[in-house]
Length: 141
Image (cartoon, rainbow, N blue to C red):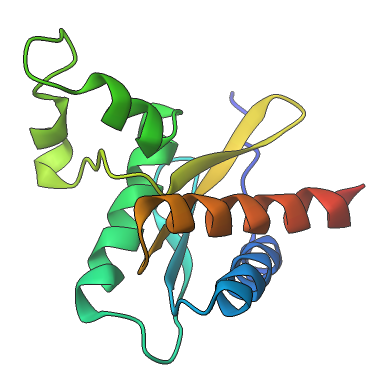
């Protein structure tokens, strides 16, 4: 029998609030998705002004980070023509994202979910996702 650790809705709200705060600070409305360790949606928020396309991109980034246990940025750096990783971006029914902004969430070395953001440049999405994780980890301490 397996015991699975995963984010709950309250955890997801903390992640979203931390990401929203950073997005507001930089002036970029974001779409923010939080998923469990299997990549299934727990919570989602589209900030006022968030782009319609970003609704699915944020969810796909979070999904990718959870199922691969790696940031989408890491795949972006290695998923180039000629690399052995090239082609992974068409997996998972086309949901696999190699655009920066999806980051796994770990607690004590255990993957418990992931967060994905979309709405700004990938660097902005990454910064806001990390801000969400930082808030979550700080509140757990």
